[in-house]
Structure formats: C-alpha cells, structure tokens
Length: 220
Figure 1 (cartoon, rainbow, N blue to C red):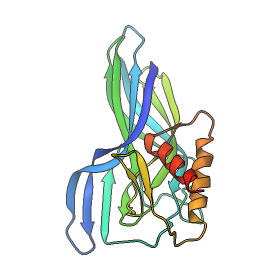
Figure 2 (cartoon, rainbow, N blue to C red):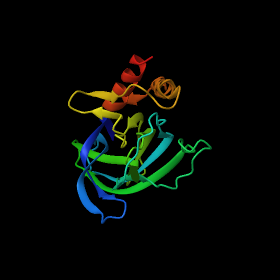
Figure 3 (cartoon, rainbow, N blue to C red):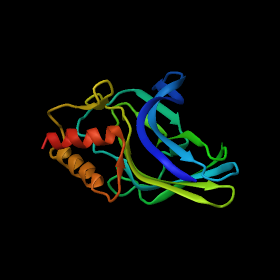
C-alpha cells in the first residue's frame, strides 16, 4: 500500500448531542469535527484489507482561554477517535499527558491496483459553551490483514471549540479572535504554542491550524 494524499479539515457531519443545563438533550448528526481524509493506493495484484487504524497523539490539549466567556450549552460528540473527558492531563489542566494512542477496527478493502479514500474523525468528547479549541499533533498507522503497516503524519489539527470570541470563520478561512483579552499574556502564549507546533519536522497542518498560526502571529 502507498499513501497518495492526506488532508485534514473541520467539516460538519459528526453525530452527538446538544443540551442546555437542566433540559433534555437533542441529537444531532451535523456537528463540526476534525476530518482526516486519507487516499491509499493498493499497489498489489490482490485486494488489500485495512483492518485497524491506530492514532498516536504526540501533542494534545486546549489553547488557553483568553476571555471570561461561558454559557449553558453543552455538546458531546462521537468520532472515530474520541478523546474521553477524563484523559489524563498535566498540572495546568489544559494539556494532555502525551504520547497516548487509540485504536479502531476498520473494514476497508482496496481492490488490486486501485485507490480508496476514507475518513477518520477525531476530537474531545465534550465541548462546553465558551470552551477553547482543542488541538492535536497526531500520527496514524494503518494495519493491513497481511501485517503490512502504513504510517501517516504527523498532522497538526484544531477544532472549533465553543468560544464566541475565538473561532474559525469557515467562509473566509480565517479566525475570529477578539481584542481585549481578560487573561494578560494569553494570546502571546497561544501564538507561541501554535507556532512551535508548526516548526515540528515534517508536520502537515490542517487548513484551520495553518490559518490559526497566521492569525495569532498577526496579533504579535
């Protein structure tokens, strides 16, 4: 097998629930989530069966919340790889202890000498209203039934979060980042964090991660 193309982008289509405190949850099949699209070619003369994908998180956490904003809306979502709410974190509570890995059984078959495109989604289980975006640096290993492994990454990705002062504007491919942070130095720390990830050797950034770096650097 060979990797032909890998891209990552925030798209709608994830399933989950949304509810306000004290009210009944409503199901949704159109939540926004990080989608990783992989195009793989089977170079052999027999069908290739991809039986498992393992995602390793080299970096994972939340950009620092710079604004004292919150609300009553809670969203929970299910992805191919769902980071649980109780995933161990470092002392500051924003960054997960890494590396950690998750595995998922797959049933993708690629005919001989053909291409196959499939999608993996990833993100945190709960997105609170006012919560800052989650980010991750991930690598993916695809396992074939023959034991062959295909490695993808590292990929830098970020989700929308739930903060009305800090979010991606999809129609413009830019980030809305309001002036007047309530936590001194917060924006600079986020800019330094994101920019340091962009310097990771061989990193490939999603469209939103790339535009986030550009937006934060523009505020320096």
